[in-house]
Length: 385
Ligand code: ADP
Ligand code: MG
Image 1 (tube, rainbow, N blue to C red):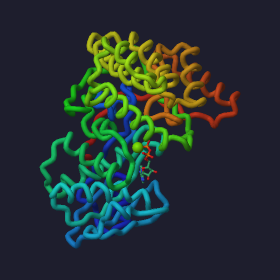
Image 2: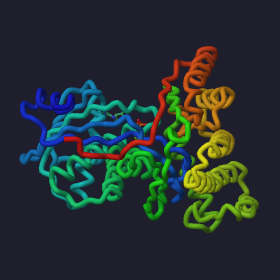
Image 3: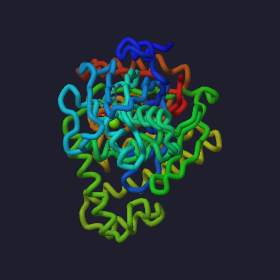
């Protein structure tokens, strides 16, 4: 029996009916495009969240996480209310509770659950531990109750749980990456149609490695800044007379920018439109097996987020600049910004020197030691037991 199943049994006094897992993700390219109906190219991490679960018939929800100090959180399914999600030490339980709520809202029958969580996805590192928890929970519940959801539907439902129940206005990329990725591939995602393509992305075979550099900081301005970025994109789309910034062709960017009066808004639009174009170009390079050549586009993406979208921070900029100086083909912040993680594309044998250079640069700057791990594109959510 797996550790997660064993812990479930000790906690609830009976073995789980199954164990499910869903991974964290990093986004290779396509940042802040998902609320503009644009493209993204994330892939699943080897780190994942496991959920052991059994159904109940009495309407009780019992949630426990090895990674949260709350003990067992017991909720009443009939009383789930997005206006009153669990608070303080129990606030983590809003994620699985939100999934149950979203299933019920969709008219799908859930009658209760015992659930135990264990994860090695770092929390709050921009690697989407929240989506991993939602998707693992959603997969467990759909299997336990025989609910007929496709993976994209499951991802959309998990996103609804986070938006409407937890109260975080995220796009759908994280949940789609966790639910739908396949090993050795990045997931090309059209966030308007939810159409997806699996793009071969085998770094090891190309003699390359991707490093995830977790800066271990999260700056306080992240939430408000995210809401303002979203708002200014939507305002710019309205000003330009398009449904979303995704509808601005890259070839017409300069004319569109000329029509925008506000210089800040111009920079935001330039980021979104050039970022969508970078997703397209990187997908082409991956398909052609020209992995190294994606490096300059990754670095260009970082500069766009830093200078035009203004969502980077000193720790991310230092991680990127140091990785580049130590020989990375390209490097960029990944995720929403203001902390979290950066990616660096390096030669397989450069892991040690790049790790050392970044660690030393952080020490010299007086920053917390970063956590640096290689990441191979891994499988999406799956049933383990
Ligand atoms: P990220 O998704 O980038 O890791 P978020 O702030 O979106 O960061 O999500 C982190 C939150 O998700 C945690 O504060 C916690 O409430 C919840 N969470 C994620 N993983 C777990 C887990 N294994 N156990 C309990 N709660 C978790
Ligand atoms: Mg999250």
